Amino acid sequence: MSQTSDVSMDIEEDRIREECGVFGVFGVDNAASFAALGLHALQHRGQEACGIATTDGSIFHTERHLGLVGDNFTGDDPSERLPGHIAIGHVRYSTAGQTVLRNVQPLYSELHTGGFALAHNGHITNAYTIKDALVEKGALFQSTSDTEVVIHLIARSGGKEFTDRFVSAMRQIDGGYAFVGMTKDCLVGARDRFGIRPLLIGRLNDSYVLASETCAFDMIGAQFIREVDAGEVVVINEDGIRSFTAFPNAEKRPCLFEFVYFARPDSIVSGKSVYEVRKRMGQRLAQETPADVDVIIPVPDSGVPAALGYAQETGIPFELGIIRNHYVGRTFIQPTQGMRDMGVRLKHSANRSMIEGKRVLLVDDSIVRGTTSTKIVRMIKAAGAKEVHFRSASPPIKYPDHYGIDMPSKDKLIAANYSLEEMTHMLEVDSLGFLSIEGLYWAMGEEYRVDEAPQFTDHCFTGCYPTPLIDRERELAGGGKQLSFLVEVA
Image (cartoon, rainbow, N blue to C red; front, side):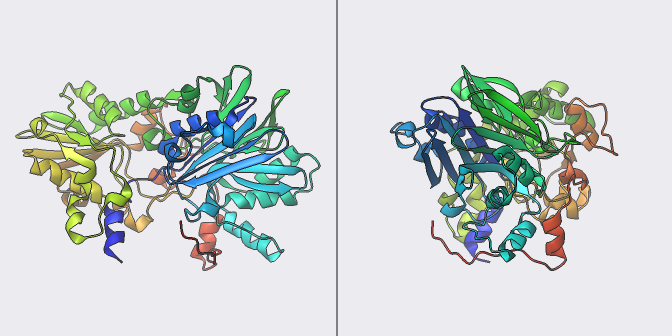
């Protein structure tokens, strides 16, 4: 493996990657401008690519780019380039398929029923199996994104109405996903049968909005109405909102990682304040894993609310002992061996005055591989800490995700392979503690976890996957995945 890969893996891949974010709006003259603002609010869910598609009722317009929303949809009014009263948008982190322009969403196709654009957040766990079957029947694919599989299923459905075709396609796929799509006269939204990935409905005057998080509504001044239910399809047109049930026996089990890490603290997910839930995680963490220390220091930024909760529960002072540099991009890391140990310091700096001579407790949202955590611990020790203790505001991550979260395989997850004592030694800390799964459910407002039918999707902690992992099982059996022979230079 090259030095470039090593550095990137140590510094970047020790964090759980955001999935993707989706946005849609119906009934405003400058829909693209609202979409750009909404995507800007959702930028934390994906920073590798972005795209917007619009229609004025007859002509579709699309614009897709590698990079950030602010680098591609600012300056001139986006609605001048992308006119129309309906728009959908997407911010992407590559969870399925390479991050090259042909995979950037929304994807557009001409169907028998007319033009259709689609974007989605999450991952379809039987996409490759379906794709191989479609290719055998003569289907042609232009991308390696699992979103294109859904478009093919819609195109091949026998339903007369577009909604029938869309529902038929949903019933053939599995996994965790949220869709936003549009035809020339309607906006469509849908969630998987467990509601693993989030999708919300908002109202902007007489117009309707769909988004992955409520923070996108706040950005454009829209009012939150409700969530799209698990297994529900909503169709928004000039007559208002119609609801269709794709899965009559849908069972809502939203993903806990939205609360642990993905969602912005100011968002409301499943009727709960993400910020308040994270503070409760820290409060319960303090009860379960106390520490005799002088100061509580969060690992920025996602560890801040939990650290506040820990400090408020214990009365131990909370201080910003680590300052994050928000202006360092991934490409700034130089591929040299000498830069390896500097990697964390490019993004995080120790605030020596809050650390020197003190017993420090670090609080982070989670521990994945452990490599970045170790580097942060060394940085705190180098700043003069007398002792360093570490707490994770989530339970040990022991199982990989297959629903749209880019997470290392099981053999790379530190908690899946080592005991608490071994991890304490590896992270070079004086003590180590994790929130229990019961504590996480308590923070979510539940008295306990119903083991026979968990209230949330918690597979990364428990190994309890809510859906069949068809592609994964096929891969393990030696079936492999369909490979793309296209090479594209970004």
